[in-house]
Image 1 (spheres, rainbow, N blue to C red):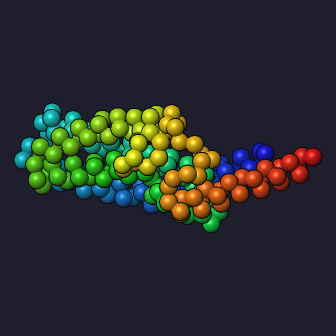
Image 2 (spheres, helix red, strand yellow):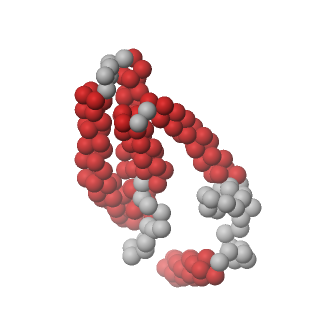
Image 3 (cartoon, rainbow, N blue to C red):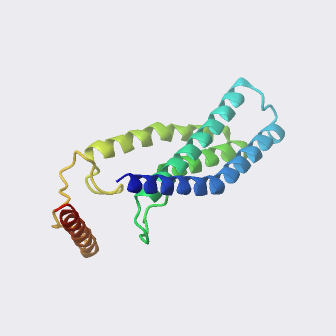
Length: 185
């Protein structure tokens, strides 16, 4: 059991390192360009308001970078060999980074009123918390949360592809359980 845990930890560390080598230069470049544009393009970049906004946006980009690394580690360590994950590794943190970059460059080139887009962060966070605990009953967002009434073993409803995937997963679980029983008996 320890070797399996060590293998998963090594896989997660490798995924985190790969994500770091990809995203670190991108985020450093985005923030360096933003800072240079903020200093040279704006007429008065050193007001308290502009300084707080700049520090907040850079802080949010660092927070999103850490989230991207964590999500890569979690996604890659839990994925199977040869399996393809439909969700983009980085998940919600990539969304946050996109919003931050939009606000950073939009406030320089378009209008400082784009800072109001940062108000989407608490609304979106509230929605994610709600959908985690109570599930999204249809619509965008995917399945239910852990308090929803979805049964994992129930194959009624859903598309034929979902049923096939559920059947394959169930077969794999049964084979694994049988191998464990044979191993320990």
